[in-house]
Length: 190
Image 1 (cartoon, rainbow, N blue to C red):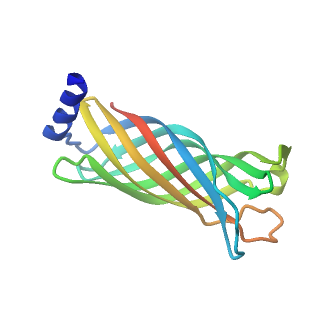
Image 2: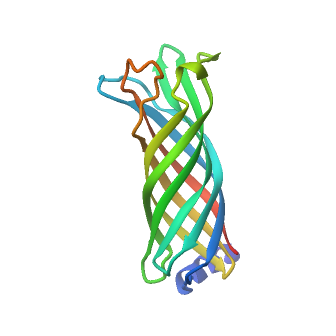
């Protein structure tokens, strides 16, 4: 207990300043929920799943960085009646990341992403050919770093994504993905 308390006290006491050119890598894992939205009134339920990936930040100064990486994102919807549509994406986000607070441990990020369908199933049947192969989305998120030492921090964050492109390859529907995940990551300064 004393060790955990010491880590939290040190995290509030120490500033973790980043200079231009600093690179941080952040492997992460989280719990995600996803559903569809569109012009039709949907009574679907959200699906939950495990999301993971590797993020990277390139710092322009101690307030701004560019965040990108590769993320595995499970999406889809529980359509009711025991039917579920599950679409898994490999996503490449490109976010502006604003670090704020007196110690720059908080961050807000936003930007576009492109996702590539890895698999798509409806009630256990492959429907990958019926789904648009790429998805363009708008990302947004907030996070907090717990400082451990100059080279290592722990990241706790929420990341959301609103799909801007439809998922149905036939063009008959305007259903799009909406996604959110709570994540835990290790931040490693290179």
